[in-house]
Amino acid sequence: MADFVLDPAFAATAAVLGELPLCHVRLQLDARYPWVVLIPRLPGLRELEDLSVADRARLVEETVLAGAAVRAVAKVLGLAVDKLNVGALGNVTPQLHVHVLGRRAGDPAWPGPVWGHSPALPYGEADLAKAAAAARIALNV
Image (tube, rainbow, N blue to C red):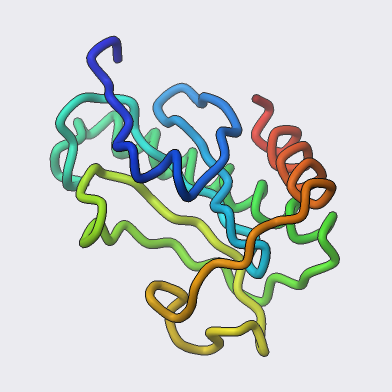
């Protein structure tokens, strides 16, 4: 994992939460949605098929863990999670990454996708600190 380089786009849109065995983990900076991004720390990845079978299995387990972090973020922010959405799109940022976000009836993009819906709503300083702390506890990072 020494050759791993994070695409700079992630630094502008998501705060560092920590490291899991496979993935670098970030909190997406949109206060409307509890949202975690997993980025496998292996060089040159673009597609799930680029991962070994063992790493794909690890990514699924880390995705489940990220779902618990999303629910923890929602709880401290007073948001409901009616459905966890998981996506690995990569159309804008091709480096392999997985979005795990909590959706709820009536959220700004419901029931459509959040991608491209509207500009992000920044976190306030206190809410960002609460959200990041809750996610780190759930992720054990």
